[in-house]
Length: 453
Image (cartoon, rainbow, N blue to C red):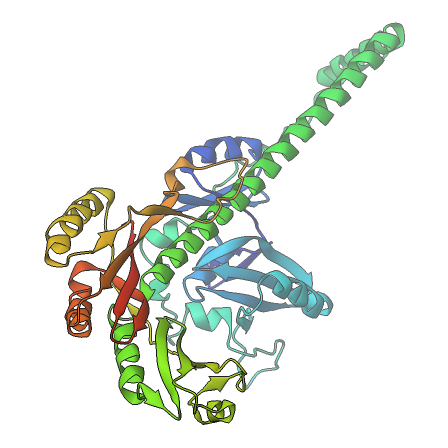
C-alpha cells in the first residue's frame, strides 16, 4: 500500500528478507523480478524489501521509521478502520513484521508479535496531524507520522530524511504498460483465423497437448518446491548464524568466569585469622590439625588427657556433631572470600615461558615447590549447524589449568609460608588449600589458570 504525505509517497506493508551476504542479492531480485524492490546494505548484511510495482518515486516506510525508532513495535492509524504495524530492530525492519491490518485486529496481532518480541516498546502514531480546531478524523496517541517528518511550521523535512540515506530508501520503478491502439479489421480477421487454427490444432492433437500441459504443471510444481527450498535454506542460515553467535557468547562468558577468583593469598589471611583466634589448647582439647579450602576451614580437636570430659566438646567453637565418646571433635567455619577479576590472559607460547620460569628460578628459591603441567579447558560444545560459517569459527580451547604444591617442614615453616604467600600474585599462582599440623608441618596447594586471548 502506498500513502502520500506532503507530496512524498511511502510504501507500507512490505515483504522483507534478510541476507547475511550481499552476493545473495541478485538471485533474490531475479526470483521476484515482477515486484518493485529496495535493498539496504548495512555492515555487509542486506535487508531486501518487496512491494507491488510502483510507477513513481516511493520510499520504504519501515526504513524511514527506523531512523526515529531504533527498536520498537510501531502502530500507525491510517484512518478508515485500517492500521499499519511495523517491528524495528536497530533501526531496520524485522522480516515478517510489516503488515496492514484492520483496527479490530490490532490487539490480537500485537499480542502475537509480543510472544517473539517480548519486552519491546510499543509506539502508537496516527498517519496525519489533526488540527484541534478541525474535526478529528484520527486520534493520535503519541503524535503523528506527518508531525514526525515535518516538525516545523515551514514543513521542512527532518534532518533524518535528507542526503544519500533517504535516496537509499527508494523502491525501484517498474515500466508502465504501453497503451495499445484499437485493432483494425484486418488484425481482427487474422486473429480470428489464428484462433480457428489453434482450435483445430487442439482438436487434432488433443492428447499430445494434454501431455504437454501435464508436464508444464509438473515443472511448475518443481519450481515452487525449489523456491520453497531456497526460502527454508535462508531461514536455516539465519538460525545457524544466531546459534553460532549465542555459542560464542557462552564461550566468552566461560572465559570471564575463569578470570574471577579470590586474591592469590586470600585463603592465607583466613587461615591466619583462625589460627590466631583459636588457642592451640582449650577446655581440655588441643588442635590436632587445621584444613582450609576456598569454601571452609575445619579444625580437628583431640582430648589432651584422662581429665578430658565428653561434655567439654560443647565448649569448643563452631562444633558440629559434638559429644563423641572417642573425644574427637571438628569445628567448621564457612568462608566467603570475595572474588576479584584477574588479567590472566596468556597465549600458549607465553605459557611455556612462564612454566620454564616457575620451574626454574621460582623453584630454586623455594625448595620443595612442584608444579604440574597444564591441562586444556575446552569450550562448551559447539552447536551442530547445517550451514556453518567459517568466519565465526571460535577456538575450542579457551584456557589452560594446572596445580602446584609447596610443603614446609622446618621449625620456621609458618614464617616461610607467610613470605611464600605474599609472592603468589607475582607468579600468577592461586592458593586453594592449606593443611597445618601444629609444630610439625604445613602444606600449601593451589592452581593456576590462564585464559586464551
